[in-house]
Image (tube, rainbow, N blue to C red; front, side, top):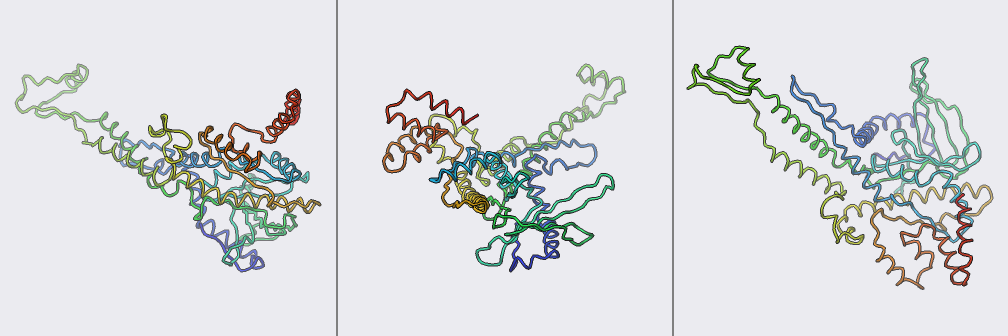
Length: 445
């Protein structure tokens, strides 16, 4: 995916925005549409036609969906955890996260990034003054960067079309987000006309890109041709079976009336007595096929897809048995772990930008929060080696905080609640144990 670079945000005129939108539609939209089409199982095999009345089975195998869902679930199937020594900041952030279904939003972003190579999020203020963030359509967004080596974000562009069901006409609208304002445009013939401009208070571009990797490639994108090849192999295998079922019976040296032919078909018998039996012959006209060779090619194609995409077949025999503990599995899925680690770096950078924008707005309202005070932890969605993690926590006792130790144990869902239980235990007031649960239940309500 191309990165659009300009010298200054002042160069981002309506004419340039319009030109960039046309360039994006020409170079990127078709690619993104194809990637999301394959994710939905709408592969090119569904468009295939065959001449005449030949069987034309079009079997689509949603490999792209399998690859993206497996990679995404492993990477972020477990919610991201946030920690900070600033309890007030964490309380405010948690309210904002809950109000935005933060875990679901993260999954949507990870899904879009996995499929198309990039995802976009917009932060805004709703009618009630609450901070909101939502996932945008990747087919309708792009970022504009400066021309420095670092490539700082100068603006985010969102364009979309509305359809008038009365006039049956479409109208394109454009939103350009800079570090301090939002510019709203409407398409007027081949030009963009400014219709509104308003400030925002995030002190930075409120549109955030989430990269899947450095090249901004989808997880299944490198193996699309292999997916097509597997669809053809699978479809043609069924076509061949259907052609066998529709084979013609070739009879030589025998004159058959319609009545005799129907009798033979009904009795499942061929009788050539009284005719030129010496030269008579009957056989099926069947196109020769090599099912073993086809099956071998299908297996090799599947192996190549797993190997080149980095997503293993977790249902395979090597992932079952007594040697499939959490630690052992990590060695077997090293490629998937490498992919997830790469995703994490870029995703974490974007989440830090989200936190920065939130803190910027809160500070405008009188707070003095620093987003650097918040740390986040990603946990892979894999069978946890509880015994190993417990031993690690035991060895690190007294070296790191109890809060950190509890956070690495997968069966501890609420670290703060567990710390409160520990405090009561150390004070010898376990009689108040039930009160702690009552208090926790009230918080849940």
